[in-house]
Length: 481
Image (cartoon, rainbow, N blue to C red):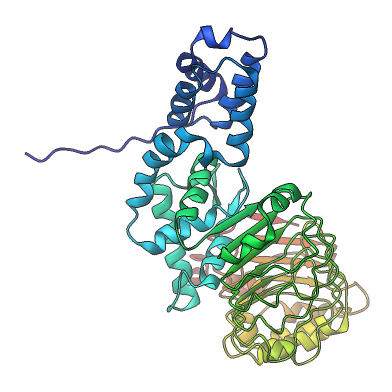
């Protein structure tokens, strides 16, 4: 007779229950052995993040520790290098590792380990992590759309294995439990694909830049990170994430040894104003400079022919890119430059019609997110079925009375078009009567319109039909007028 196997998800405990379980393992006589220990014990319990296995294991390990210094050492070790806490490796990580070892293939395992590059409790955007997997080559030998489907499947598998968690009611984000992240970083030290994660300047200094030669992935993340003056030697490095730091610039020779690098993410470094030349990064496939204050992009035409993702959202101070550079990125599939919560964009001639012309020249382009500032740009965009079919996020920001001053003209501009891939639409300061083009936007999720005094209706009655009504706004999540 076949046994029936049932799976039960063990939920993380709230702190009150966590500490009660921890107390039972430590025992009252130890907690009462010194007046400082009860508060220190609460701190240790918090570092277990509600995971019963960790609470029991560490509680038992501390059941004979009666000196505050021993408890402080445990806290520091759990916060900085939990794998050095003996029982974590032997009793916690090796038990949790079963889920990792049970994953179907190395591709799933690599994707799981990659998630450990994000900070503790970080909400990871699914589309972002999938793009990083694609760019580094974990998801390869398939088209962009199929690779994204594969990424969604892998995220589902990792959630089913309880290695990733859903974030609230949103289906756009996942996160990794802190103890599982610690295990992932421990596993990475056992393998050739070493991951180094630093969240402050002190940890960079303690570890030593000389050790970076072993790294395949490096993550620097945190406001206290100011980086370094010496040039690292990283011949094996594939992914370099530097986010939300105080970095203002990089050594001129910083990237010289990073010729294998495929992913460079420098986003959300608000102090970053300048980059060294990128001539050596011939294998780079992903470049994210969103929410930085860089003033120029040091890319020479034909130097980054393998680049597939170029993300420049919120780069207010980036006035232009040398003409011909965008059109020379022969492998480019995804381009994005739209406003963000942190940074608005202002009109500059290059980012208008010139950019659209260069994007249209790219044979591999599949997805664009752009901001249109003038009526000329709107008309040029509307004259290109290719750009319309590629656009994912579209921002139209034309000043009233200057650019779209003829109501009948502006109405015709946005009444037609084929927007198969459009997810987000933002229109500001435009003289438009309707948004009838949205009847073809089956993927549309967000619509925002402001300062459009002539806007009376979204889909005029004469454009509606029963066949279109079945898919119209089926995926809409929010409209704001």
